[in-house]
Image (tube, rainbow, N blue to C red; front, top):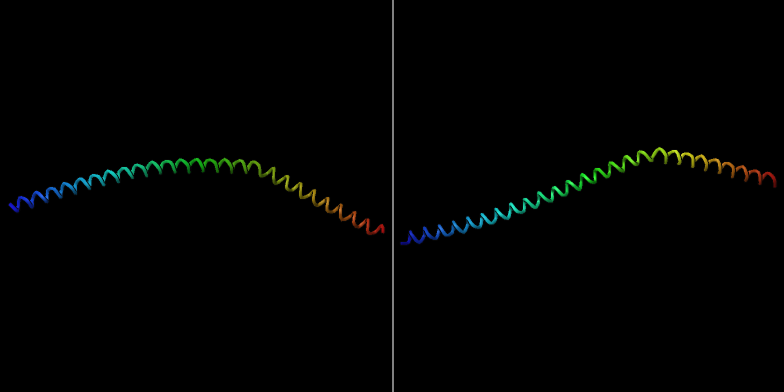
Length: 96
């Protein structure tokens, strides 16, 4: 009788462990699916960010020559104005 009771108890324990393992496996698989979905969203966002950065880079390379040229012209204009200013100061000093 004790052996039968022991066998039943072990069978019940095994069944409970199997159910707990099954529930744990289902929870882990659910978490895995959620993580895969999140990964897909992150990959899609990264791809979108990469595309945006490429677009910005291409716009930047298109704009840079114009900006560089404008910067050079402004630098030349500044030099000419500074030179004219210095000449005017010198003229004023010499005319005193």
